[in-house]
Amino acid sequence: MQSIAVIGPGAVGSIAAAWLAQNPELEVTICARSPLSDLIIETPDGPVAAEPWVLTDPTGALTVDWVLIATKAYDAQSTAPWLERLVGTTTRIAVLQNGVEHRERFAGLVPPEQILPAVVDIPANRTGPGRVKQHRYGTIFVPAGADGDAFVKLFAHTKIAVATDTDIRTRMWQKLCLNSAGAVPALTLQATGPVWSPQLASILRALVEECAAVGRAEGADIPQEVIDRVVDNGSRSSPEGGRNSLEADRFYGRPMELDARNGVIVRLGRKHGIATPMNSFFVTLLGASGSPWVR
Ligand SMILES: NC(=O)c1ccc[n+]([C@@H]2O[C@H](COP(=O)([O-])OP(=O)(O)OC[C@H]3O[C@@H](n4cnc5c(N)ncnc54)[C@H](OP(=O)(O)O)[C@@H]3O)[C@@H](O)[C@H]2O)c1
Image 1: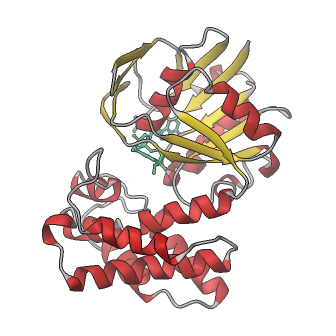
Image 2 (image 1 turned 60 degrees about the vertical axis):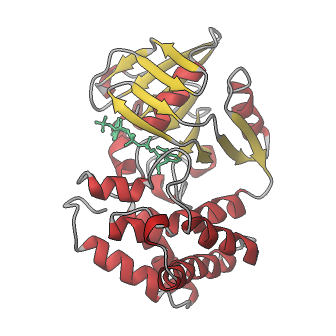
């Protein structure tokens, strides 16, 4: 029996917890900020239901074998009271978040060598407490190695394609190239497809080119075709699984993962002496508009 605590039962956390709980050999506990009773995930093939333990008070948490963190990036520090109790010297901590700073976000909270960055591509959205629509089974990639292999085994019984990658840095940055472009619909509050124009394409391209330049300086392999694909995708209507999450968050007045998706490009660009005017422009404008909760 392995014990797993999932911190943050939103779209990604609920999906991970519900699928893991299908294996009776795994003891799944949800660490929630807001109460919920059970989980029902609407998958492409019908509902997957689960009734894991739910804790809303960290004082009741015990040390586990695995912690999966699935809060939004800006809520990383707020998980401290959970991590204090859940993490022992052998606990492995998978961070299921967007961006490229999975370890840095938890600096000072847990030992970095116990962290496993996870690159998640599971289009999903929350429809209520413990209720999630999983539009596609999707993928999760973790770094190659013993911990990565153990993480893959946890999900062996699920329909989510979980695998290791020998170059997780490249995978993170290629995903960030895609996510950085989300700043455009977040500002216009429209999917790019319907309002596509050559001018919009050049703005999108500049955002992604800057991301690629900084990613390459950080050691990621980002071929030109990755950039071209993101720009090409922008000309289409909403991708499978609905709207861009940055746009949706701004639309609904929720906090945005602006720093994890575009701010990081500006910050790391500065470190490498790479100019990032387009990302800086969007970070400034989005930060000054709409959502009162930009972080
Ligand atoms: N959704 C997707 O399709 C998708 C796809 C790929 C990657 N991602 C990435 O995955 C990460 C999670 O995204 P998401 O869409 O699942 O977010 P989400 O639906 O907003 O869920 C985040 C959850 O974390 C909870 N939370 C926040 N702070 C907490 C704390 N201190 N203790 C316990 N729970 C806490 C929130 O509680 P409340 O219920 O109180 O709000 C919420 O349930 C993000 O980095 C996102 O970019 C998402």
